[in-house]
Length: 154
Image (cartoon, rainbow, N blue to C red; front, side, top):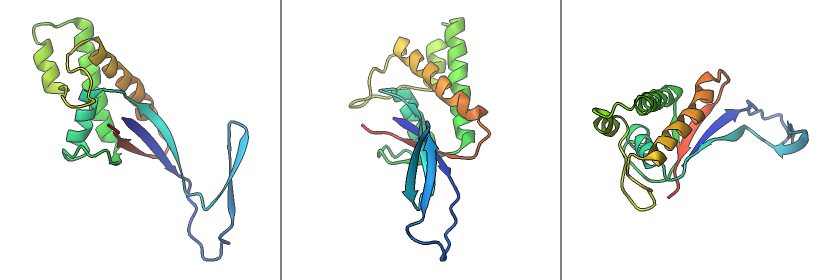
């Protein structure tokens, strides 16, 4: 499961521009030239068998369609997922056992399925939560323009 950021670099279409005009980009001190380059795509996050996170994206972004297609995700939705993960992390840290499992199934339930990994609320689940917090926090602090996309591959 992948989260990407696309940044459009703003080449306006102009009938007067030659078709072979090259755009030069320098990445890590290496020059790249490309004809008609319009955007850059960055890999922002990766999850492996994080079925609860995937379920959240399917339910909240993909209208229930689990089809491995790319979907636009606005920052507000990413903020919602971040807040859920922070709440779960705090529950875990404070070990509120009396409400713990019921609250987890309410906030971010696991999902069964082929290639979906373990469905227990165990260390792996909580590692997925922490990984998600670590992926989303820099995005929410980023004030630069860009669009975010989620895509799964089972």
